[in-house]
Length: 310
Image (spheres, rainbow, N blue to C red):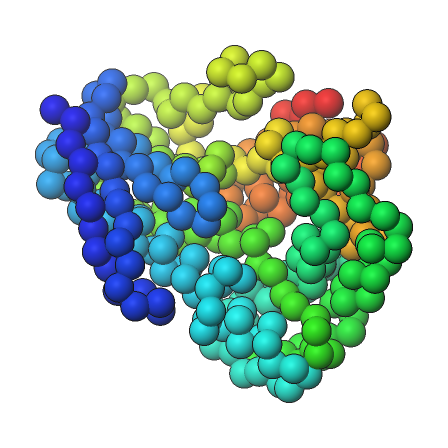
């Protein structure tokens, strides 16, 4: 029988009420919760309800830990300390340093177009499906606070000019997926699929079916463009299905070029990548989106498995 319950956990923000829903459907347990601004789900082949519950709690707890630690919306966490340092150097722990090192790698691979300081452009752009395109003056004013080259990163110390910020949202969800899939493997659990807002990884191949069935979103809501048989590894998707502006027949994607402050021209509607890990898949999908019209030639040159929707 379907079941649900509420869970109270301690976090960096004190006591927080967060809910997990657990139900049995199509011979698999589905544990659902919200984290990182996305619907999250654990699908597992556990034999017993209590095992499915324990696994969902494990995954949800790790997702919430990462959200509390790295979300720019949380006061008092490491990102908040960096963003409010007022030009002072901030010492960070190893986990944060590893993410910053990875962000630097992406910055260099993308020819400086993946930039974790570009989150402040949200002050100019509000991708809510409306038609409010900011003026060039507004974008230029915010752009003064963008540019990783202005940061001084000497592990474990990060120092940035006052007013600049970092936003790890571009890599945090994929990192959380891989962390959770890794915990499940360490646990030696039944086969599981971790799905955080469409970015997903599997702990191992399922036993009760030939593969995990994953749908790639199509143009029409509820109608998938592709059905993927996934036995191992991960998938990640980048795109503007829900975050865009539309004005005078022109669609403005939320994928912004930090060098101009404007949406990347001719970017695909979405790109889905298959890789060994969700971080790898997310890295390739993001780098491809930043290539705009050259996304598909770029991906073919990398010899990766991908699905692109224009």
